[in-house]
Length: 384
Image 1 (cartoon, rainbow, N blue to C red):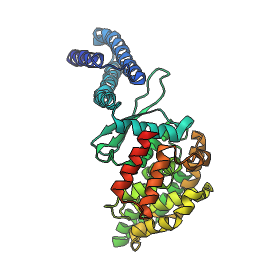
Image 2: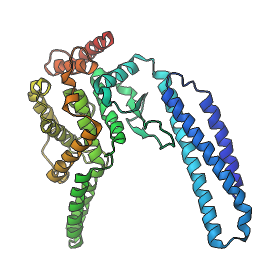
Image 3: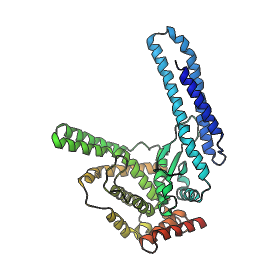
Image 4: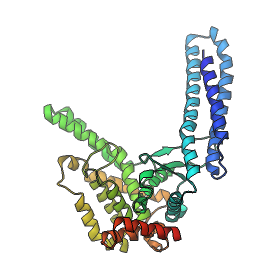
């Protein structure tokens, strides 16, 4: 019954093995180990599937329920093989890009900056520069002690602008979150959502007409917080790693976005600014980096603060923010990051991210134009 599927999978497996064999992973052992382990998993799945298919001839006389369970088990094993093969098909082209980029000056700057900032808190990540939207690709679980790692995609369109380098740390935050034992445990936020869900369901069931439609829309916006919690955590992570430079880079990069736009995947800019400020205050970060820029911070908020709309008031629920603050602090503690890892505790003139913060200050104080400040930062980073 599954002979055709097996032949196709075997042919595909041979092609995958040839593709992996033709890539030189000597400069990136973790990538080489990853692909060898996935191939090993595929071979083991093939071996188990081949053994199980031997039983197919014996199924002719078996009761229909046993026969159905047998074929269902084979279908699941075939699906598992396809998933593992898809992982290689997805990751191998990215890995080839990583290997070809590793000697580029832009790549080395970004890689150095992350290692300087995070030190022992550095999650297991691999950087890739790609002309795509930033995204995170989680690795599948393997049957080995290989550390969990992620590809971090940094958009090629901004790789030449050092002032936007801090954006990378939001994506590294996703990688850090995936390594946390609390990464899916936004417990307090979940409870707050449950309470508000119950309230809306009760109110919606007893409403009618336009009121019911309005309540349904509000309820959907509340549900966005399931994804927003992770995005806001990553903003906080980036602020800890890079200081005010991240906030300036984020607003500059998202300047074409309406500040109160409600998206299922990302919170409004205004909410992201407010939350980053709140987390800084909760951690007692009052060093000169923020103090010097407090006035500029207010100008930054004012630049993207139009009159609040009813939609924004709906999503900017204080109970959600308070709950998320508590969750973020727990996750940060689990990851071993706090204000002791904060960038300003180092020498700002001898680290890449310190120089980028100085460059932003020069721009905000009208001492340098953006293009000049960018060249100023790049030249000093390369001379470190």
